[in-house]
Length: 357
Ligand code: NAD
Image (cartoon, rainbow, N blue to C red; front, top):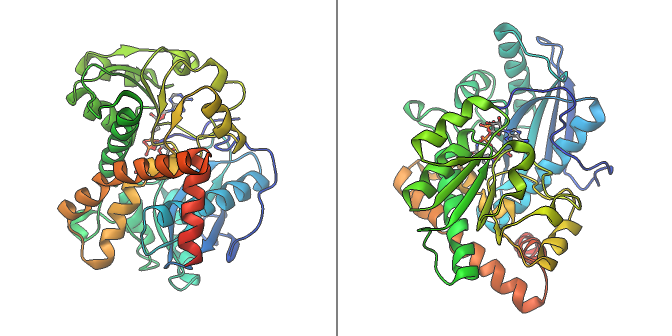
């Protein structure tokens, strides 16, 4: 779980977020005193689903911008994965660098549960940065519109193994497109961010025969290099190492007009949400002939797994569906080539078409 840090906003986009959402609620929790934001972007294809993020924001504008932007991204993610779900998101705003006592954290989760309940099922919550499947149990004391409960309680549990499986599938699809083979044997892969998802992406790639370069701002994560016989790059240099594949698995906004010219990779495919600081970065990547798997396609494994809860959870069936992410990525590359556009634009167009029907 990422600890809130001072001056480390999850979004680097300084523009105001356009408002095209169905519902936005802002509430001050009566138990915790903390502000909760919930945005329902779209319920056109089904109830909106998206995680609950507990994070230290500099101010309410930043928290609101984050929840609006993340909710919209969930609509696109569910539509491209062809799930009967819409997009939503929840945020509990803490102060940068603040850590909550366990009592206040529980209070905040119960308050958040009340906010979810007030939407009457139009929004289903799940875990996200700063929350875990254990936290979902606390939220479930106040609302039944919770996904990702522990497996023994009938939920789909921790989504990160499925997100990692989907990211591997996306990486293989990119390798097929760039190198003519989806095999990872002998490929060099940099994984930046070794949390729930990144550590599992690294292990999967190592098992598939890739050579790894790992990086994290938390020096304790360096232990993984021994287990996987991997190299290590300090986080400030991690984007510049010469590799076949760069897998961003930390926070968003890492690819911008300053970092993209310094990349030395052929492929970018990872788990982090909102990897591009803004949409113009997709064209910059294409100009540099770096193939980018749109993040909301590559990292959809978690939501595909959660969607399985809608008709009785079955892990094997979830895995089969998640493995199809590679095919979706290849389809998007085909669409982008045919339309002479970027994978980002092709994926967004596919989502718009699905929403229109
Ligand atoms: P996590 O909190 O478990 O791990 C994030 C890791 O990134 C931590 O180890 C942290 O120390 C590291 N980190 C933070 N800033 C960094 C930096 N600048 N350089 C290098 N390392 C840095 O989070 P997670 O659940 O693994 O999720 C990772 C990303 O994937 C997030 O953007 C999340 O929104 C996205 N995502 C996660 C899931 C899921 O199933 N957990 C699903 C879809 C998308």
